[in-house]
Length: 492
Image (tube, rainbow, N blue to C red; front, side):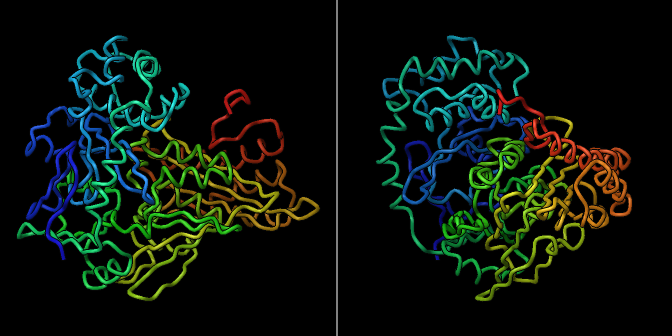
């Protein structure tokens, strides 16, 4: 048992003990370390003013990612390298190329959001040898809100940074091996226990240790990326008595291709899952691209989105449509549950005390499968779905539907299949008449949610239209279907 959390902050080693397990990285940086370049804007992972870099060893390779410090717990940082904007300056004291480019192109006005924007750009800078496309830069900046400048000069600043210096010559690239060595020294297989006298956090290093902890502390809150639990702390002012943070359990941070299926560990990030699942169909890649911001996707996990069971989550309808199953572990025992049966009621899943999600098994679509995914929200970026629909059809040699899965989020208290609409499709050709019958049958499947995000009437209308659009786009064969967004071939 170890009673300290050890990590590297910029260029200094930190060993923290006896702190509040719910202490956020943002509060610690600003209050304890006086590193005030990292700002608080929203305290819920939306605005990006608090963006920092977190470097982790992944299969022996050090990888830096942009994350939101406002909802990241210090207790989750063991073995990591945290980089703040103050650490970007060159050894001679000059500006980092990204900072210099922002100055030259007037990418900052009031300056409040600028440090977070720069950290997002530096994360992109470190992962590309040459300037990425403008679309990729805009995607990386979707989680950084700026009211002053407009984004033109900010996007251009990263392109200019590559003209100032090559990213391979960046100090973080040159020091990567040394930092990796320092982080490797921190790695051990001890269970961490931290307590402030009122609350306790545990951090296992292996999946067996995790199983023991969950069995012995069945009421503890499990925390992966904290993209949801973090808001319990900052917005709802909740303080769980016991938490178990999972980030050190490398066995759960994996994605394996088994030929006919993908096996996704519960700690695989949404960013990593986007690449693996996106290879199955470009619509999947686009759906996950619209899941929060890049900072949220870097921290959030597939397992967390499933285990949390929100009625408006985007990955559960997709995974249900693909026929996924969830593997639950309790002590040494495991059981596999079809994902569609895992969700029982609002925030209630088929989990016994001591159960935790270990992995998700995702069958690959068969050749000839028809797949359609739509996310309907008020904003394109960083918005929760009003309705998310994921559909899969299998047909026989004559073109008649032999299997139909129409899964929706936002239409009920749980992610749910539309069984009456599915029945209207079975044994028939998927034409406009059949699609219309399925769309009309949705009224027997759902009494849609009615809240500030969308009315029940709106949701019911949209859900029916998604089925109609699925058929129209499939029949035309000329439209590039990408997560409910019609794109020309030039932008595919």
